[in-house]
Image 1 (cartoon, helix red, strand yellow):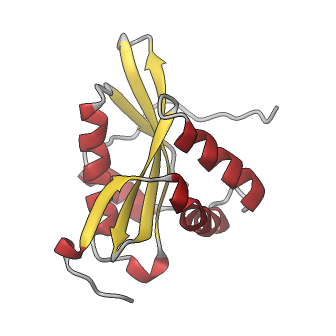
Image 2 (cartoon, rainbow, N blue to C red; image 1 turned 120 degrees about the vertical axis):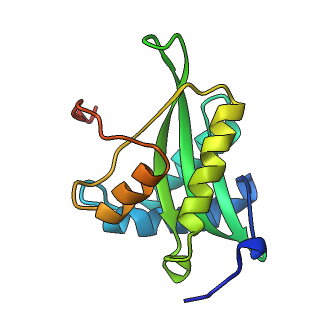
Amino acid sequence: MNKISDTAISFAPAQLADLPALNALLTLLFSQEHEFTPDITAQQRGLSAILEQPDTGRILVARHQGEVIAMVSLLFTISTALGGRAALLEDMVVHQAYRSQGIGSQLLAYTLAFARSQQILRMTLLTDHDNIAAQQLYQQHGFEPSSMQAWRLKL
């Protein structure tokens, strides 16, 4: 584990030049999740689409010494219930060498501040049922479980 101080970490929107690092983080994430399998080509298409179309969403990153060590994706939509912008929080992952140091919490706090600056009224996310650590992190930042259930259909 690379122990680093809070001041050594910076947070910012990702750039196209970050694609290789982002793709590596997604491969790590999708290797851990129950529903997904890493697919570098598909991941690169998705990442590029978000980075090239900022109205669609943003990818936010944590950096240490210029290296991307964590990421989160925000995808924008409109909530008819709230009458304004909403976001899906997806793909939150911290490189395994930097875990358990509060970086995920700091990135999530940065993400929430960024969302508020973009007039996002609600943020929704999904997590694996058995990912208790992630659920605790989200609860610490004000997220609450929903009574709604996620359903999917691949087209």
